[in-house]
Amino acid sequence: MPYIKPEDRRRFWPTLVVLEDEVMNHGLSNGDLNFLMTAIANFYMTKHGISYNTLSDVIKAFECAKLEFYRRKVAPYEDQKILANGDV
Image 1 (cartoon, rainbow, N blue to C red):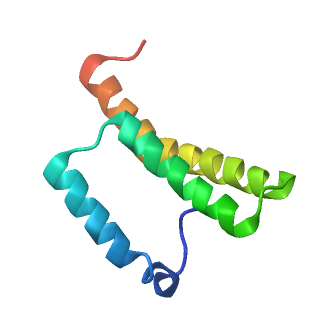
Image 2 (cartoon, rainbow, N blue to C red; image 1 turned 90 degrees about the vertical axis):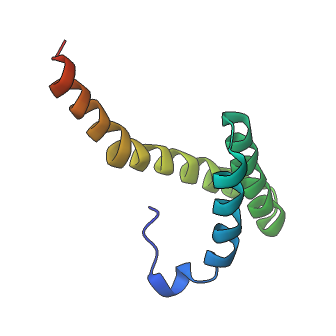
């Protein structure tokens, strides 16, 4: 889950501020998003070594992030569209 303690988030904020500025000023394609996610996964694998456990960690992180993104962002959007356009 992406809910890490606030004190653990602090080390990422400087990098995220730079990334946010880049995205807001220059945009981000879906290919760019995929590249960034893959690059972070590659950093993780470089740090922890390539093993079944490390590869599994990356897959778990992607899958759980996907599910949480769906739960928090996509499902509420879909609910709004049902209200606006009617259910199936």
